Amino acid sequence: MSCCCICNLLCLAIFAVSTGYCLYQASYCQKQSAEVQKRWFYVWTFIGALALVEKILFFLPLIPGYCIVKSLFIVWLYHEKYNGAQFLYHTFIQPFDAHLDIVLKPLAFLNLEKSQ
Image (cartoon, helix red, strand yellow):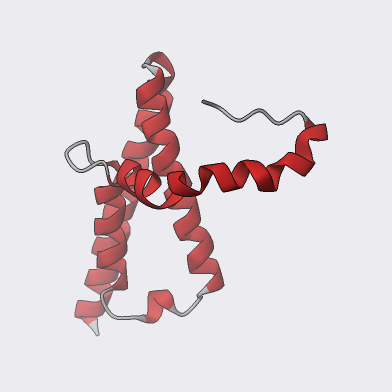
């Protein structure tokens, strides 16, 4: 039982440090180039999607080792060597970009502009 508590505390610490680092980079990147801002936008988009999936699939945190996998996934998303968020975006989201224009066309009256 104590091992489980220690593991959960360790995962929480990793998640808190990685999230804090992401927040620091996001505030720092206001002074950075558009490419760096885009990279952090992708990271936060996938972290938000992960949080949404966790809310819908409420049983995920009950799976043994989920906290560790989640922490490693978040580190993979923002680490400069791997750029996991950009990989996920260019592999899974960007191919549907043209279809997204068709879906959003009826919402043109809201004056939403797609960033290039």
